[in-house]
Image 1 (cartoon, rainbow, N blue to C red):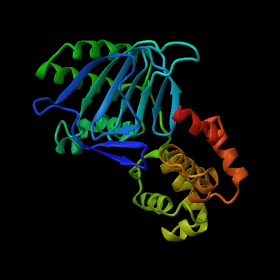
Image 2: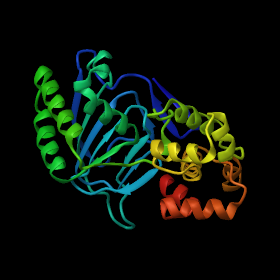
Image 3: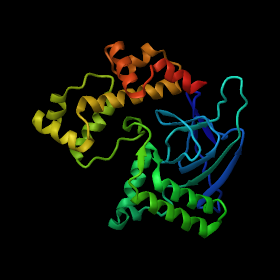
Length: 293
């Protein structure tokens, strides 16, 4: 069963796994990946072995190359494309696609100290993770074994892969932090509450003074705490959220650019255009056109 959101994003409700499978690992071959702009409740690890033109994850559209390997958390919108160059035929694609549910190991494991690296990996995967370097090479070798394995052996290989990824320093986030469908957990309850407030009031004017007063801190103390917890200033954080929200509206609605600017809380169209270009290296009109080609 699927839901269509604004006739763009396809939200898959049914599991991608059969009733007897804990881990699905399939070899995809053909003239396309069989994808549309969609999300689902399962985690996904995809290795592109050949073919493909772009990978769209969250608010980030990037070119595909053989060997591309990513780990996507649940409910993260994504799409793999195989768009041919003008006057050329599409080339065949080949990929290994693995799906498993985030509660594969139950719920209690998240509270165990020994599982902290894995918990952090799953948290980071909510933005999508690009896997590179020697980690990518080792992960590819495991995936090649997984696609041939069945049952318990496949599960053991997945755990080996997750252990490898949880210890690696060669993973980079794909989508912007602002694209997360849920507020990120914060090391500070007060800053977490502020982040929720910001996300719920993006269309309004948000002042640092008001946020500091909300949590009972001076403006300078609040700004230092916010920077420590989010790795950004308040204006930078708000701007990332607004641009990420704009990306969703560009992708999933037919609103005009002017309407999107208003819905994202920008007072100046020129400022919005500059900020969008700075983050995505293209104007919003080109961004929308690229997604829909």
